[in-house]
Amino acid sequence: MIVCIKEILGLPDRERVRDLLSRGAFVSGKETAGWASQPVKHNLQLSAQDPVHPELARLIVERLCGHSVFQSAVLPKSFRPPVFSRYEPGMHYGAHVDDAIMGTPVARSDVSYTLFLSPPDDYVGGQLVLEDTYGEHSFKLDAGDLVLYPSKFLHRVEPVEAGIRLAAVSWVQSLCRDPSHREILFDLQQLREKEFSRHSKSVEFDLLSKTYSNLLRMFADP
Image (tube, rainbow, N blue to C red):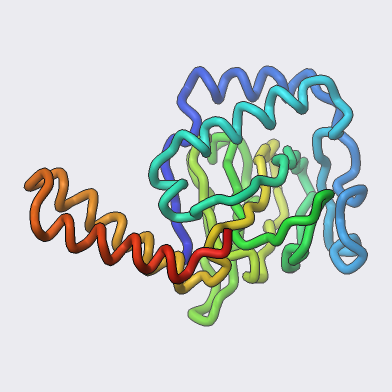
């Protein structure tokens, strides 16, 4: 399941993020790439030791935790700190799959996301391309918009031909490791919300809620 979410970051947040990034120190993206991804990773990223990094990471995670669509689509259990990427002309990130286990303490990567921080008119190229069984899907979203997708997908960032591409990327361990289970629960949650908005608490809403809760109980891996 691929989900695009608009305006995870509003205008004040976007301006704050861009200001902090303009003062940050960037290093080679290869420093955090796994051995198999290093040959195809050609970008820069904000140093994790830079003083602005904790504030930026905290802001992003707070906005994700407060967004209902993100929460219902991902069912997050734990977050990895965001990585803030910068692509200058000629930079790209070739096809790769995200590591299955990350960090200390270790966490499973179930859902990956890219939060676009640069307006699409600021750069040429730089599309995020996801590969699944239906083919390739290309994304170049507005600043503040996010795309999330199963971490099992092969994906790449096309070469930036001009301008600067800024983005935050990270990974989440979900309460439901199976993407098909997350999709079923996400669809049911959308139905619950629509039923409640139309008829408030109804017999149909209660039945949907019962089904949602029982499936979550069955699928969850807390």
